[in-house]
Image (cartoon, rainbow, N blue to C red; front, side, top):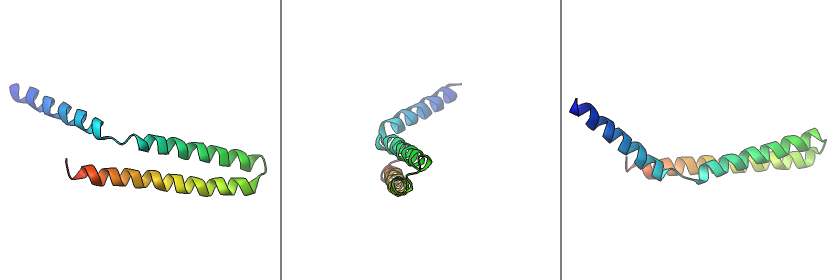
Length: 81
């Protein structure tokens, strides 16, 4: 029975440690991607296809930066866990 409590304690400690190393920029990037996507879709709907196309290109850039942050963070902290 003591082993079970010990394992649970180690697992909780690992999760707490991982919470601290989570990158706060990834959710910000996800929100920015969603915002640019929404603005692009609205401009397409209003008939402004030139602006909509620019916003879709911007969305790809922001989304790529977010994925790069995720991969970079996983690579950086992957060595430690």
